[in-house]
Image (cartoon, rainbow, N blue to C red; front, side, top):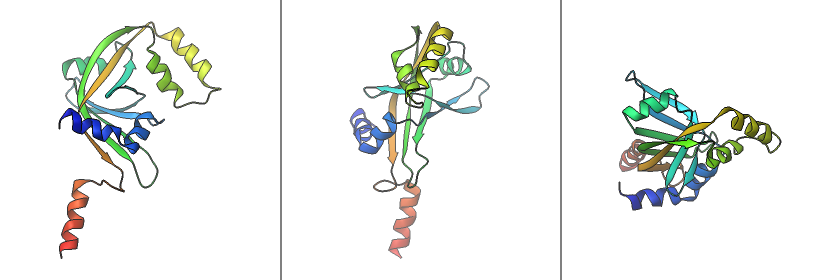
Length: 162
């Protein structure tokens, strides 16, 4: 999949809704023991990249240094579901203090009344964070209105044909 195709998918209204909404991403990666892991994690976007921040000594940082290939899912719990699937490569960089995007990502999931205490706690806890920057290499949007999983589409075509 080329960059233009990825950009077109990420620009779709439902994709933008998911990328800018309160839902966490589910980050999948291979852990150091070789087994897969999936974790919910807050994120923000910069251009066509998806960013997250975490503690430099977290298990995911060590695993991503060894194997930077990742998959992300961002979805809604409503019906019909809206699902954004992304595969990509993670780049890790050390960031002094708290990235502004991390604070914005946190604010997406809480009320304005909750935010000041959370922000103060984060700023007092973290001296530095590792930025995880994901560059998408593949993307698919399933909105169950204009796009559905290929296997479902194949069944519909087969049933329609006879």
